[in-house]
Structures are given as C-alpha cells and as structure tokens.
Amino acid sequence: MSAYGDGLASEMLPPEMIGNKNVTLSINSSPFLIDNTHVGTQINFILQDAATQEPFQDVTLAVSAFKNDQALFGHVFMSDGGNFLFNVAPDNSTDKISISEEGGPFPGLLGHGGSYQIKGPIFAAGGLYKFKINVLTMGSYDNQISKSYDAAISIPQTNDYNVNDNEDGKQTVTVVAYYDQIKNFQYNAGNRTMTFSMPFNWSPDNLKQVSVVHQELKIPRSFTNFIVTKYDAYVNGLKLDDKAVSIDDYSSDQYRIVHLILYKQEANTIAAKQQNYKSEMDYSLSPSNETAFPIIQYTRNAQYKVSLSWDPPKILAGQTTKFSFQILDPYLVNKTVDSIDYDFSIIAGKNGLMFHKSGITNNNGDPNTIDVKFPDNYTGPITIGFENLNGNSFSDSEISGVVSKPHIIPEFPAGSLVVIVAMFSAIIIIPRFSRT
Image 1 (cartoon, rainbow, N blue to C red):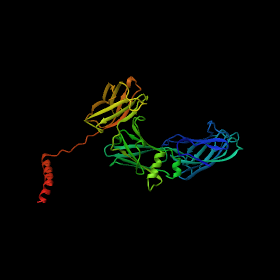
Image 2: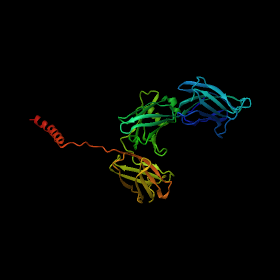
Image 3: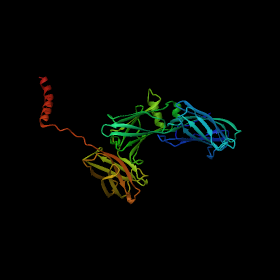
Image 4: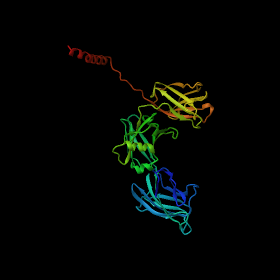
C-alpha cells in the first residue's frame, strides 16, 4: 500500500493506518532557495501519530532518491526518536555518494539519533526530487512492518536572465522555479513576451498528486514596458485565469514580483483541453491589452483597502492623468469608510517626490479624484502612494505605475498634405468614371 506526496518544499502526507495506528509522514527541505551561493540542503522526515503529532520511536526507513528518473541513492536509516535529518552537502568533485551517520565517535552503538551526512553530486541544483520510502520498523526495532510512501519535494531554483528591450534596453529578469527547473527562457522584444518551459508529467496519476505549481518572476521596475496593471499568461497555449497571476509590488523596492500559480483544478483543466501534450509546461507571459482597474491593495496594517483607477489608462509624460480612488473597509465588499484624512503622493521611482496632496475622502461613497499633470521630461516607473490614512502612519499603501512617452504623430509639410488629399480624391473619383 502506498501514499503519495506532490512535490512541495514542505508537506505532510495523508494519514494511513499501520496496524491500529493512524500514521502520517512529513517531509520538508531547507533552505527553500538554491542559487549560486548555495552550499547545502537539509531534508527532514518525521514518522508521527496523526492524532497526537508525536513521532514514533525506533523507526527504520529504507529511502531511495530519484531525479529525472535517475537513481541518486538508496540506504537504510534508523532513528530512535522517529525524526530523520539528512544534511546534504553537494560535491561535484566525485561521482560517488557517501552516507554516514552522525552522533559522535561511535554512531549507532549508543543509539541512533537520526542525523545523517550525505555527500556527493546530489541536490546541487533545484528541481523535483522523488523518494521511495519503505517503513521497516515502528514503535520498536523488533516490530517489523511493511509500509511504502511515494513522496517528492521541490527545491526551488533561482536563475537570472538578461533581456534586451527595444525601449528599456538591457534588463535582468529573475525567475524562481518552485516546482522544477525551467529551461529555454526567451524574451521577444517585438511582442513583449517572455517564454520558458518546465518539465511536467501530465499523466492522470501525477495530476492526482499535484496541488500547486508555482513560478515567480522578478521584473526590474526600470523595465517599464513590463510594469503594467494586467498580464496575459498561457500554459501550453491555453490562457490562464486572471486569478492565476498575482502581482506583488510590496516585497521589493527594486522589483515587481509576478506570481504564476496553478492549483490542482487549473492543471486538470489544462490537461483536459490540450490535445497533443508533451512532458512539459510551456509558459508565456506578456502585458495585457486590457487594463485591470480598479487596482486594490491592502494598507500595510490591513486597516483599509485602497481601490485605485486612472484615466487615460496609459500615463503619458506632459499630459494630465485623472486618478480616482476609494478607501474601503477591508472586511466588507465595496463598503467605503467614513471621511478620513489622507496623503496622496506620486514618486518618481522610489525617492523623487513629483506630486503631493493632502485631503479628506468623500463621505457619500463617491470616488475621490485628483488630476496630476506629469512633467514633459520624465518617463519611467512611478510609485503612487497613500499615507497617514485617518492619521495612522502605519496605514499606507503603494501601487506601481509607469510614465510613458507620448505617441508622436508625424507632421507633414503643406505640399505633402496637398499631394495626399489629391491621391484620396483620385481614389474616390475613378470609380465614378468607370460606370459611364
């Protein structure tokens, strides 16, 4: 009998009966990210009572590890306390994997602490690692049982990619893959589209195990062509629901973070719709032609929600933009709060104050509007800030935007204009003569 895990950095497998005990196995890994400075990984297994969450004593596990269907190691591990800690030290200088029990000069003779050192060319990169776990003893080393688990953990991988945009020049986009390693990252400057692929098994058995597939893209705020209010995302040519794309402008001053999150239901929907699928997910992300208004953000202390729109949807240098906003109750749908004080600011980048206004919100629920004339000589990222809502310095919210260059309509000399009018006149007159 087997139980399955679906490849997260930390998870607890569903409880299963072993004898008269309801047993679950938890598995987690740390650190959660692997990058160029990464030097090791810890993997923790705990066999525990599902009712009390207490680990069982005298547990023996036979563990085999795999990546990309390649066997990495197989070993029998013992723990008096039912808690197993694998300290994995990647070492590419050898093609062999060594496993040793930690715990003083005579490990095993004075008991089994469950801590093991694993060295070799293993876990040096992110991706999906699968484990075949057989429980051999539980409760006592003399109590032999037979129970198997199929589990997996995802060790996220961080990669930087250099792109060249027609307007914004050279930019570095960071992708954090939380399920498996990505490949073939490309940026098409012509249609402003990022594409990449990730290995994925679309079989029904694997889909039953998958609860979430998560990718994270860090977009520099200087990459103004990609700082938009809405994105279009596709997997294997099928458009993702808007709720699968999440924008985070809070976590970093330098980057906007875009999360692509596929839950089980959406993965199953894609599997049902695609026709000739291959063993991967092909991602596509581009700015949407639509504008996702209103933009709704919680304040830092979660006391209010800020609902913001602006018109025209594209903010242009040298032109006036009308900002409309409401301050909402965080717990009631579309319920505005009573009149409160506010500070409204437009900041060039993160530091240069471009516009500021203090005021009091409307008491009748109507949107508050502010007209802002943007200077002719600034294009690039802006931060739209709300501060000191109702006099509370912790009630603030920030929303990212971009000031773009206005579209220049070419001017024609007077003579050229006469020629153009004459050409169009000829086009109109010719059909009339052809009918006579």
